[in-house]
Amino acid sequence: MQMRQLFDRDSSTYSYLLWDKQNLEAVMIDPVLEQSERDIRLIEELGLVLRYSLETHIHADHITGGGLLRERFNCHVAVHGNAQVPCADVWLKQGDHVLFGDNALKVLYTPGHTDTDICYLAADRVFTGDTLLIRGSGRTDFQSGDAGKAFDSITGQLFVLPDRIRVYPAHDYNGMTTSTIGEEKRHNPRLGNNQTREGYMRIMSDMDLDKPQKIDLAVAGNQRCGISAAEGLVNQAGVIRE
Image (cartoon, rainbow, N blue to C red; front, side):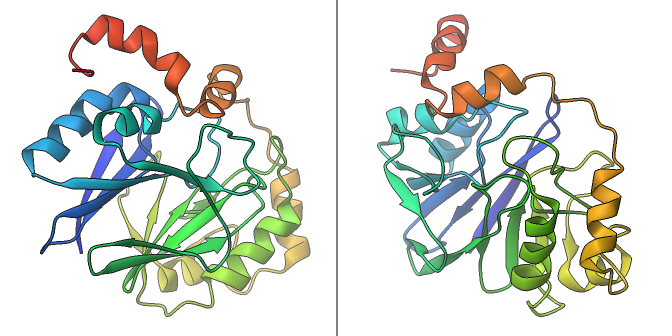
């Protein structure tokens, strides 16, 4: 499996382009609308056949580019079954496998940040969305968040993986690009050193965070696969649609 880690500076979002080296089938995880031109150009330059645009959850800080990728490449947009996204093509659940070439991503349902959160597990790495961040975790104070469920998801689905598994999150705000399960079990200040469920819930309840600036636009836009919001972007760029 080949991979490119891509970054959107405004939302500090990582998107991931994965593909099979032999037949060039590909998937994109968490595309960002404003980066659609970049992503489309890269996919075409590499000669890839995009099969899926995958979401780790319904985001509150950016609008997805999944709808535009589907229009350009006729790929499938996939979300967790709890997401109220009638425009999606595939509704994923725990244990499903997303296939591209000889590669597969196993779906892990990890509610807590929202009730739509999933992670994607490959043989040697896991794409954790907002469930597990590098030295952090997704907030649980809005949008169906639940700190207890988040702790259960992280400890029951992710921390049971081998320590060597690489962690690739949906965001980082400190310039970090990747970690490992072992590192986070030892050094994550919210979760490391055998943190208790009650201790984690206390940490999360004591956080005083501003709501994401784009939450009202982002959640509504992501429930439409980003298509309505994309119209203005397309009209400005003039190069995304043929």
